[in-house]
Image (cartoon, rainbow, N blue to C red; front, side):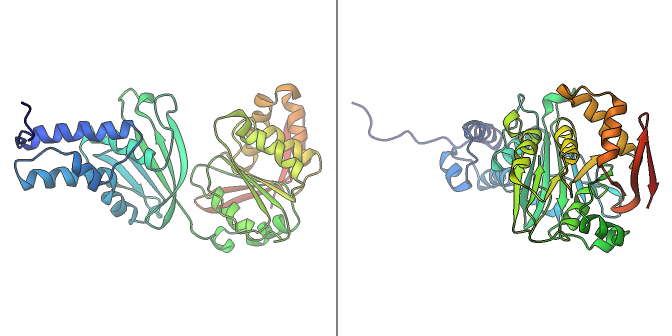
Length: 357
């Protein structure tokens, strides 16, 4: 006759219980589920002490609630670099990098980052090793970038967190405010250039505050960063598929009778329809570009067009001529300040002519 009663469970010591709990936890994650403690607790074995249960719960909450992350982000830095539990940094607003400590075991590092990607519904894995996305954390806005360990010889995944402003910075804080006001008011076509973290996106966000509220503005980005309160705006956010690329969105946007087109960043194919839009009479176009100076931005834009022009098949000299004919200004940023503004005058045999403003 079968017994109607279950055999009593044998309490497990901490090490054995931890291993079993970890397997249960990973099993949930493999199904795309980040469990709550109340549900996960029901699946746990019997522990040999209250201390063992508390240790499991603390580790669970570190991985799923990230109390340490809230403490780190309260440092109010510009950017945070999470390389490993013992090698992470905060870039302060003064430009200094200071170390931060993360109370995770090295074997839990990948687990934490995978949980983070699941919570923000990101498809992050060996096949898709890099994702960058916008997120709200503890009442503030951030851009998170995850790099999978499969891309590294050390096998360690990484996270970079950039703080985004809640509200636009005052235009005066960037310098050259009168000239910047003129560029927006007179609907000039211009690029904002600079290195990573130089303030390009922050300046674009502030300049959009100066746009006529009756204008229809189209904003194209690969990560949601540009803040805009204009009522008549159309936004596109790109992804990996060709039909949802920045190049495709630029083509769509030209059919929407935009008063302005704002391109979050020129990196590759999108440079072609962006510059061609200028050539067909569109005004008030703004975009950002990584470059080492104002004139370097012109050469970089021309090089990108030459590389990705495809059917255009124009020589570098012809591309530079097209660029200098339609792009009117370049604003070069450094350390959140306008370092240089150049007015594009033209070019001769691939060499651009300009004057500093």
